[in-house]
Image (cartoon, rainbow, N blue to C red; front, side, top):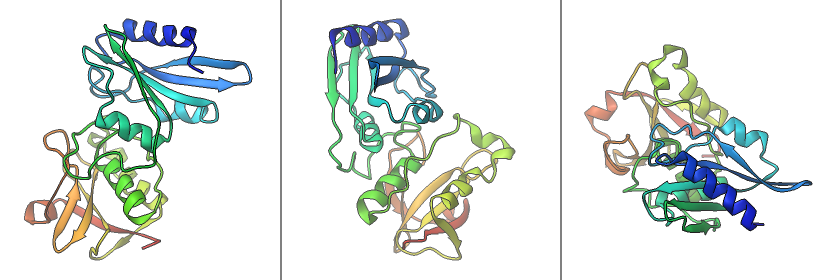
Length: 237
């Protein structure tokens, strides 16, 4: 599948995008294999990538692999890269720039990273991805891969119900108090609920609160309680 022509197209895209990360899809259809260059919509395009989920949905049946570049670093896949590959269940290809080393990763159906200690990469390793990974691997409940709005969406009051409605669409409903595995919805910034934590029992939550700290377990104390909007439980629990 990875012909020299395909690899040269990917390298050329990576070189043009430098020092930002290039990203795109390798499509396979009746006409053969081709490269679809995509816009990097990440809030930090110099160190991560994000492809518009609408673009992915449009080509979902033709996607053979996902590619992106690593500017000024090796092609070794990061924990976030592996998490993306596992969540998408698609092979990932990485090209370094300017060395043009190429590495790839094929999903293995494993937990993409330890629940605690994850670095924050919006849309890849954030509070939602932690919840979906936890539910998939600990509870055998597949929540899919919820699409992310553009970074900063929580500053628009018109999005106030978006986060909670997303959980409702995935099979959650509100409950009065939390028990093991329930989701705690919080409003940490802006004017909208935008953060989800997993209640681990005994007044402990597991969550990924943002760029300032890695994912972790901690006491569900007054600080987090004061920012809690509601508790939600999946219909299968």
